[in-house]
Image: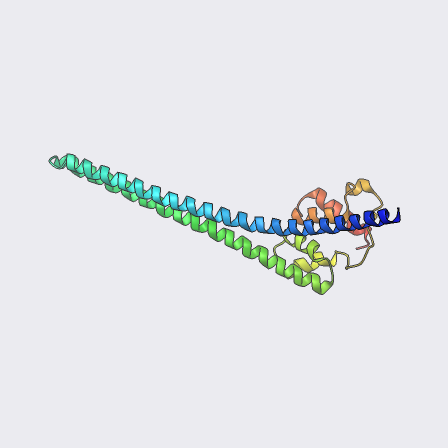
Length: 213
């Protein structure tokens, strides 16, 4: 019986170890799958761009062939030929303008994406530095910093309202009715996201008061 019990205990430990290994492998696979997905999307995007460029070349060739055929058909009609050339030139100019406008808009969109990534990276760096300096939770501060302008002063102010690492003290407000029954973190996050909202501000100030701030 003892042998059986030992085997069962060993089996449970092996199962537990195997489960942890599976979890670690799942994390690695998830990261790998995420990178693969990014690569796939980039490849698909490049294919779309290439296909669009090829389509534009075909369209330009179609119009060029059509224009040449029209000019050839009317080469003995000076009056009509002049009007045809003017119409073709106008259409070409409009097409070029559309192309330039599209390229400009695409560049603006790319720049906007770069600016957003740069701003996000800056906020994260400031949040990590402030969190380490003021000894508060990095993940929590980084999450809240996303809704700010990224300035050190604002992120420091938010950090000053977070509990220090290892501080287990919880907020127990006197009235759930006045704060809507929401905990401090949720109220704080809602206020930072939308400080102009009257209800968010009331809940936030009420909970600060309950904390003695």
